[in-house]
Image (cartoon, rainbow, N blue to C red; front, side, top):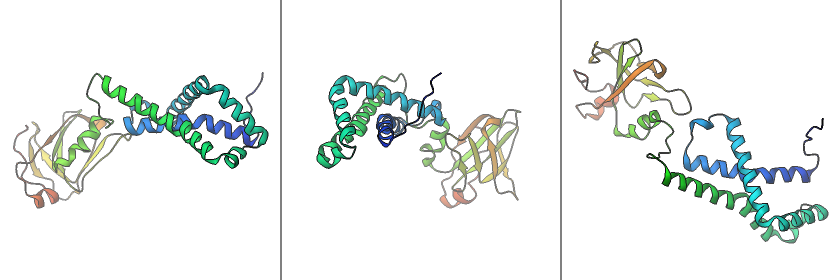
Length: 233
């Protein structure tokens, strides 16, 4: 059985790099413009997509300008890989930028634009609703948070400037800088003294609600939070 040998010369190594780079450029720009998705949390998945994109782009290059590319590569091998840069530095650099960055970038932009126009629902680059809730949406200011655990217990607290919410792709969890006693119906009671906040793991939560405070005193909101609502919304 014949085994696949790794590149053994500088020329072969350069060829492999040039064949892979267009797909890497395409995949990188797609992730930047589209935002991360659940199917690409693993590095192996992202590498596979980049290699697939490289295969497609290189096939297009061969269809459009195959004879010219093969002839140029053979001449470079015979005269040395540095010869094109020495003899024609500007044109060599221009073709390299076009094939490695220009065409893959244009393809990534076209695919991203097409998907946005034909998406069946509203498109957002934010990967999850959790990231939206505690990312851009959190700019609305501090607020109360209450959550019902899967065993039916209510927990709640104040999400202020010292609180923290995790982000994708890490598991969703939440640190509230101030903890409150909660009623059986989810109503807020008095603050829990002698603690430095509460940690909530969303894997244990059945439902969660963000409650806007009735008062808007910045000092109270940042440090301790205003008077909590008496009843659930």
